[in-house]
Image (cartoon, rainbow, N blue to C red; front, side, top):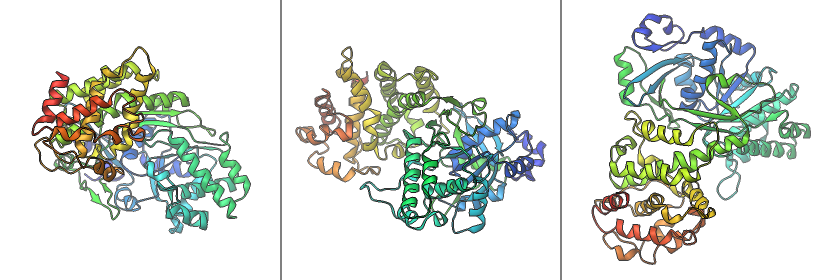
Length: 537
């Protein structure tokens, strides 16, 4: 069996393999999409193929839509060459169920993949021809938070952003330049309204997208490439809106066990490819079952009936509350606690950590006991039910090849939101006492202990990348494994640092406790385990 339009005509073979096929005709859908495009998506990777394209598949299957999505790739054109084109832009979606079973479905809602490459005249003009159509209602994005950045950490323009500003729409190379160029073509063709919808997993994503597109447009006006009317068009949210969203679904890299399973069923060409840009991708996507998408409902040219596909269409305040619920209480803090202790205790899979009674006790306390008293309830999703699903289904899923080492990346950038916000909430509520934050204190101490680069057996351990790693390790240079007394007085600089924790831990009343926990956890081999067990008993 081959994943393609022609290949899925043998419906019986796919059914016998347990694969659900679309109930609409891909070729007819693609033709309708070309005539009257409704939805373009930037970022042709796994979260799009495994989640967002599946939303439109539901609408096509139910008859609530008759056109599909056009995928535009701005970063890695080989994804289109090696994954999209050979399979008629279809994806074999493999849902990884918590009980170890899988569900398989061919997602064919992508009409075509386009290389958003200004150096390829054919592809560039094809994308322009879509953006000038009045029928186009939205462009969505999963390009990672880095994709929106025009400036580096020093506030300087990146080389691609500077190039685009100096050379104008026709030579755009940065994702934001490409989007701005397409919107300029739309403006020139009559300035029809539309929505630009970031679906990336970052707070205030719509604001980030708008700021970058507006900055690019203003630079082009200054340099004489566009007129003031275009900048006014981009800034007028009654004509060009930038809705905010919250997305949550884990789509890890293609797993070898799934590739083998598909091969055993007789499905061909499922082996992953690695592009020259180091994208690891296959014709199939494997992902967890739970998924959430909450979108601010501001679409000046109309939109697909996304609520019929399970999307929460709501207002900006509710999007914010849902994001805050997930990031500060119900998911991300649990992940970080598992990450640092998983590395220290020698785990390489999050799912395996959820068989460890001490670590399960840790995340239970972080979520239920310490998080729920200050959780932001969005009203559309129950925070308690969300944690129930995270701890009961998502984290223990044996099929999810997610590692604590990956999640431990950039932890210094995550802590102020994942733990600092809860600490602030406790400090602001006279009925709550920060001294009760035992599990959060353990998580913070565990992270500091992790930075030493020595596991619980006393062996050298690689520490994941972090922009503050060298600075932090320099501050910890006088602390030595096996010498608890070396901690005293050598954590002050870190524990006072509001940039790291969102608060001064001394002012929060947590510094002494964290320092004591670190001292106990470096006492010798097995000290991390002993401290965890004693604190959570």
